[in-house]
Length: 172
Ligand SMILES: NC(=O)c1ccc[n+]([C@@H]2O[C@H](COP(=O)([O-])OP(=O)(O)OC[C@H]3O[C@@H](n4cnc5c(N)ncnc54)[C@H](OP(=O)(O)O)[C@@H]3O)[C@@H](O)[C@H]2O)c1
Image 1 (cartoon, protein in one colour):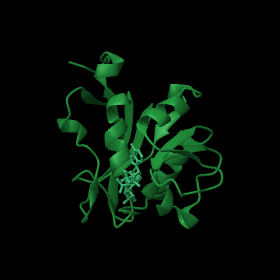
Image 2: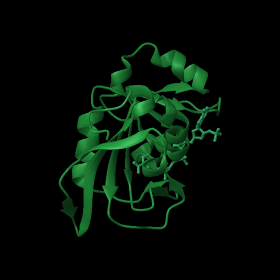
Image 3: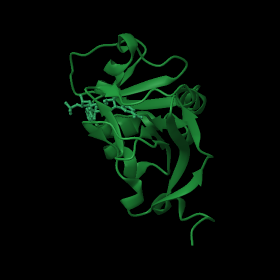
Image 4: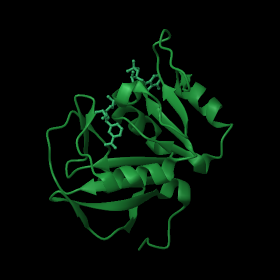
């Protein structure tokens, strides 16, 4: 299982249930990684999508403890236990945790990889991702060249959870 996220210099990810940045190449990267796969998200993230509709061409699993909530083409689960039961049906490598903050945080220890797009900017935020540079067992293993969109510089990075992967060749 992997997490995929876009953060800024403060590891901010959202404000008022919206993304902080909209970078087309990052959207494309997200789509390429997740298409045909399973995406796991919290209810707030689902509701932040246009029309509150699930992502096309992906299995959408949503953590939600509102038992009255209904949505077509979404698998609703009401606890982590229920989520893990559901995930038994899929290859773990095909499962992407796509937010938001509460779901990222709960599932981080169970993920082997995090794809982190880092935007070299700072905006007011009310939701944050865990700072992986200060988190035991997580190490940055890959980093793209720097890119720029509308004056925003950003890189694609990959972190590994050495507690699950047993370390990588990039470790010292
Ligand atoms: N930058 C990025 O890459 C990125 C990606 C995705 C989202 N975001 C941003 O993140 C923000 C949303 O994050 P968020 O933390 O507010 O919301 P969220 O994680 O998307 O969803 C929270 C919802 O999920 C439910 N939930 C979470 N864990 C659960 C569990 N174990 N069992 C049952 N229900 C559970 C919560 O229910 P209860 O609270 O009632 O338990 C709550 O209704 C938005 O600003 C969004 O734009 C950013």
